[in-house]
Length: 223
Ligand code: CO
Image 1 (cartoon, rainbow, N blue to C red):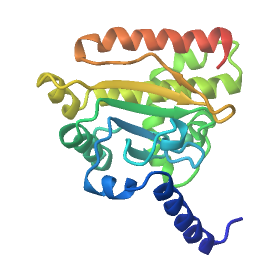
Image 2: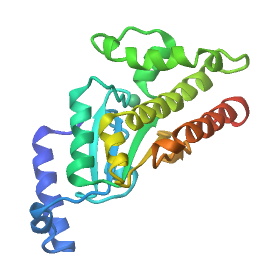
Image 3: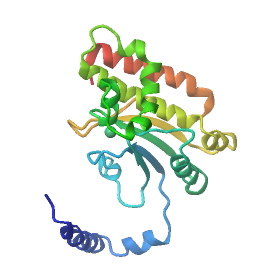
Image 4: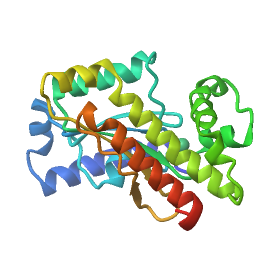
């Protein structure tokens, strides 16, 4: 357990260390930000955006919520996406799920968690959409959980490609790629689901490619 006051002390030491290693770092960042990446991930404390990809402050724009959901009626998420695309002009939008996600687990096990049950309906929609794959004979409970984590990351990334913000940006010729990743708490590694969509004309093909990978992992090799 950390003492609350310790956080402020750690902050001072961190800021001094960064400034010592790279004089002028904070001043330069205070003038502008120009991240190339938008990370949309789970709120889970074990999946910190910058650390997972080893990027410094200023390099990744971040939105996180329970179970990395992208809903077309969530003004919070859509505002982040709009700012990232239209103002910051990020090059990549990455939806990052993670194995062992508590939100996804609640859906797969039918556990009530409270108010978040309503939010997790979006993940239930993903489960229902892929019920045939998830009910495939031979899948262990662990594999079903892992597979729904992958499916959820893919479907939320797919939602990004269908947002007016991204569709309009592509129509203007702006270069943006949308990706779906899943992070492993067990070894710190990211699995790229091979979605990688840089325009609406390739969306369907890349979706099928990602789905094939998810099926293969579920059926043969685990994660
Ligand atoms: Co999670």
